[in-house]
Image 1 (tube, rainbow over the protein chains, first blue to last red):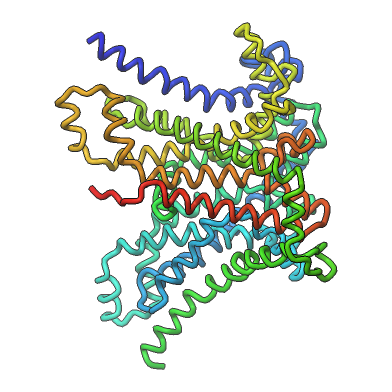
Image 2 (cartoon, rainbow over the protein chains, first blue to last red):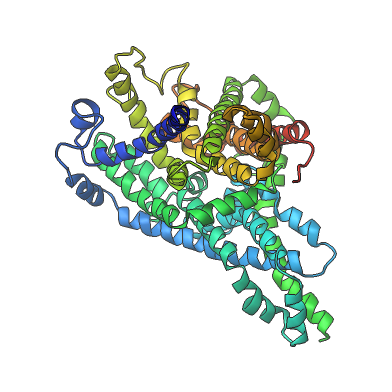
Length: 277
Length: 293
């Protein structure tokens, strides 16, 4: 009995300590978004704010076009998800289910993006976007985001399409359905769980991406949240409370999405890991 | 049109847009980066071929060696922290008698979904030399470790790397946890009958079976470390001096601040080669045999 009890403590204590390590910095951030500079750095570093300074949030909204950054991030993320899903879904279907000689080679080709660090294409990409006048439009970031997420999405969809029985297409073609009808009416509804996983994953990626946005977008009106945060940091260095408020607000959507769809996020992660290496 | 022709047309409709798009936006630029690394080029006027000069210049550039070293330190911190801790926590969580497993797993994963900029900014205030959280904890404990973490010559890159390790540990944890769950129960029965202690059982049975997963984890941790950019860009801007430079930072600075596109291309070509070398090495050395149950 005693041994069982100590065994239990031996597991729960470290597990809880690491929960603290993961979450306390975030809770600390939440607290400091309601504090004054003095409280954050000297009088009340660790605890709950003595007085809740909601005006930090007001200051954040008035000093800073938060809603616009929010809108930009939303447009970019949704756009990236839509194009990534459509392109990779069609391609993976052809690679996984249709009969052609280069199917396997084409699939391997499409997964190269998983192995290449994205920054390597930045310089030529900037030139390309300059040439086509894509710079300073939403497409300036949507195009590279989609291109680089295609590899990941293809891997997930391919794996899903492969698990479906081949009788589906056979009976569909006996019924006289065209390839398009089979794809849109029968196959796409069957891989809805995969579409959900990919969409959430790609959305989180596009919402948080920084380097490409930094290089491609200089127009303040088009900046996404991560760029906006950086701008805020350089403009309002002394107002830590308002800075905290901006960080909290920009974090809420992704945390909510994760809490609602944690299963899908984790599934997508595991399926894609089977390919690398 | 015959049905065969219709089928082939559909095949083209399904594959060509994706293949073309991917080729133009990803593959062609990769080739161009390698090609342009042999040129002196400002991105506007025509480039001049200079052979290996960019690479020779890299070898004599102090920034390059600092970047190379920092990339390796970054990768080392990610591997040790994320895989070490990920393994321990995943094994502890895989114990079916633990309550609240979902809660624990979710808590460890939450930092992963945050924006890297937010996390970097958060840790700037944690590392703040005057009354930041970390120094405050040390002084509350009566310890004398307070220092300027981000500007110290010996602490800067480690502090920055830890930020990234802290944020993304959940990824490795989930991967290792899922792999452990797929190990069949019966493999543990003999150990149970012998009454082998908990950690010994896992050391002898679980960890050797995780080879494939570790391979993937190593690749993402090491390439993630070598590619680091965002954290130092936000936290220290590469400084003070060049002490928190990485290859991506060098590429960014050369190309987008000084307009030396050829030199920047050479830095990113080295980065890709470095990542590929590590990926090949890991594939050669780790878990060469596939395990099937």
